[in-house]
Length: 192
Image (tube, rainbow, N blue to C red):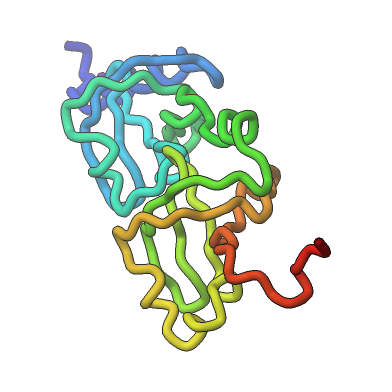
């Protein structure tokens, strides 16, 4: 050796790999670590980070629900920071956007089934398609349920809901419960 220690050679090799990476490039690598803020993937001697927002379109609680150490993944390179020697990656960019399909196949007023995924003080989130959750606001519950909305929905319940509104830019769906036909009122009577 010419006086270089092992760390210096590793550093030189790492910089060489980093300089060869290009934004937008697709690489295959192996998951090397999973942390609360994302997943590290070894892409040829350099670990890149897939941050939580770049993992998937779906909702999840922890990155370990999306990948496991040792998994082989194809990822897109989002950014290479040579100064900080960091690589930002995306798995999500290589997956179909569920919102595009949902928008093409669903309309306002459409009725569908969904599963309550989370109950919050002002309503409930309901999974209505893979990767798509809508909000059923308490204001959309029938009058008799206003004081105890938990009587209508609990986590895991399957409900029939109707699309009240879709905001594709903000990626939000407002839901309501379908109207239940009641007995006709005096104003509904048809003349004979």
